[in-house]
Structures are given as C-alpha cells and as structure tokens.
Amino acid sequence: MPAVPLKGIRVHYETRGEGPALVMLHGALASHRAWIGQVPVFARSRRVVTPDLRGHGKTTRFGVAGNPWERWNVGLFTDDLLAFVDRVSRDDPVELVGASLGGIVAAWAAARRPDRVKSLVLVSTPPGPQERFERWFSRHTPDTLPEPDRRLMALWHGEPYWKDLARHGLAYFAKSRPEVFAPAEDLAAYKGPALVLQGRHDDLLEPGSLDEWQRLLPQAKTETVDGDHAFFADGRAGTRAMNQLLGAFLA
View 1 (cartoon, helix red, strand yellow):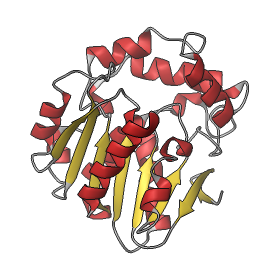
View 2 (cartoon, one colour; view 1 turned 60 degrees about the vertical axis):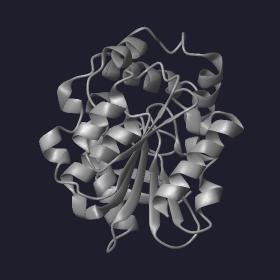
View 3 (cartoon, one colour; view 1 turned 90 degrees about the horizontal axis):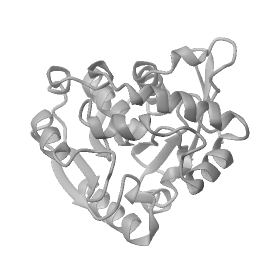
View 4 (cartoon, helix red, strand yellow; view 1 turned 30 degrees about the vertical axis):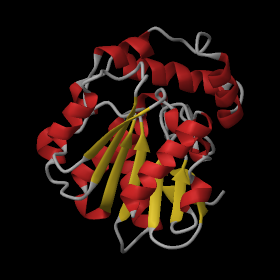
C-alpha cells in the first residue's frame, strides 16, 4: 500500500482504477478492506481510493510518540481526510463515500470544504447523538464483541493493538456528544448531490435517522436496504444492493 505523510503520521491507502477519484472511508475499528466488495466494481470507471483512518489498519497507530490516544476524535479524522484529499486529488473535487464513523467524517468534510466534495454518500451513518447508537457502544468491550468481528480486527490491526483500538473507540461513542456531528448550519454549505443508505435491521441507528438526514440534506436521496449496520459487506445480497444503488447514484 502507498502512503501519504500528513502532520506527523503516514496515511496508508489502496488505489485501483483510473478516472475521477472516489474516496471511500471505513467505519470505526474497521479498515480499508471493509470495501472489498465495492472496489473491483467501481474501479472499472473510477480511481477508487480507500485509506485506513488514523490508528486503523496500516496508518500510524495511536499510542505512539506524537499520536497519543487522547487525540482520538472526529475533528482530527476530518483534518486528516481534508489534507489527504488535497494530496490525492489536488485540483478536482472527489466523490466521497463514508460508512458509520467514515460517514460522520465525510459529512464534516462536506460541511467544512464543500468545494472539495463533488458528491456525498453516507452509509449507516447517525445524523446526531442517538440513544441506540450510544447504548450499543456502551454495552460492549473488546472481549464481548462478536467473534467474527474480533477475528477481523485482529487481522486488520494486529495483536494486541486491536484491543486498545476497540476499547478507545467503544468508549468514545458510548458518550456520543452533539459536537461529534456536523450541525445543520454547517451542512447547509454543501449543495451537491447526496445519497444516504441505512440497513432495515440496523440495531445501531434509530428508525427516524433517514428523516433527519433528509432535513439536514434536503437534496439527498435516501434508501433503506435489507441488512444490518454493515449490509454493504454482509453477503452477496447486501453487497449487490449497495453496488446497484451507489452505481445508479454516481451515474
């Protein structure tokens, strides 16, 4: 994986295909490989760029000199993303897709620098503080996460670091605060096309989340998809639905 040096860290990313840049952001505790079902499809017509967020995958870990755990916050991830976009697509705005934490960061990027975002896709992304979202994160520890998730995190982030990453990530969203989410007055600066997708059986998001996104982004198209919080990576049906909806939107 190539890497871009940014403010004392190195952001590792994968890039495939040629054409306009489609930047895809994974969720908390995941890695760029969360998009394994989408990259080959969209690399046929675009340059798909999938970075590892700070502290995730191969990007500089938390807990090292200059990058303490206390720095974990959405504002820092957003700063990283905007600097990263300026490096990988210097002149042209990017098509931006984010899932969960990646969606929160993508929404902030669109609010802060609407000139750098050509289109915005938010997947399984809370529009603001939600009791269900906080409850899910507060009831889990690294040891109580589902075994398939534990195996993936160990694979993506390595032993024993993944447990520290999980512990801090869970604690951060267990006390979800309004300042974590882009407010309406800032999001109003983004006038470009938007798509918001949510799984029908997502147990992290409230049922009214899509209505709230419609209020925050009146131009957005919203869709409910069969599946859970990670429907886009959960089997053939979820992957196919994600690719069809995203493909139609980008076209």
